[in-house]
Length: 173
Image (tube, rainbow, N blue to C red):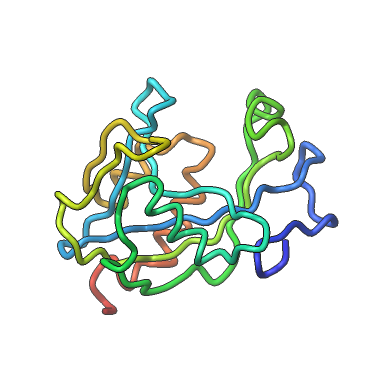
């Protein structure tokens, strides 16, 4: 994967498929809590942070802010990007999901994550977007979110929270 998130054909996952370029947002409020949404397409107690694919020609930061707006209704003007993960973080799909999602084109995702401070109010969050991904949302601690993400993404979330720990635990503004 190149720095702009485009596919490097030399990098394939265990399923022999490329990683889907993706960007995600750790949205933190003034109380140090992180936004999590319950997946509309998962009947289990599966929560996640806003994230999604990077479109062709789009950089990861722009994709992250676009996904934030698309999934939460939040205007990026109400936010400040504080940090980004130093490297791309990837995960492999479990074998039972390979071929079933993303039209079978990818074996997992390679993600760039951004820590974003939200300066708006809760009533400015609207998950009833044009193409909703969440059926409910709430502010959680990083540990709560890690415990509620689907298991194959847990390591990614833990690595992202570790990368952003200085901001999440108040050691850095």
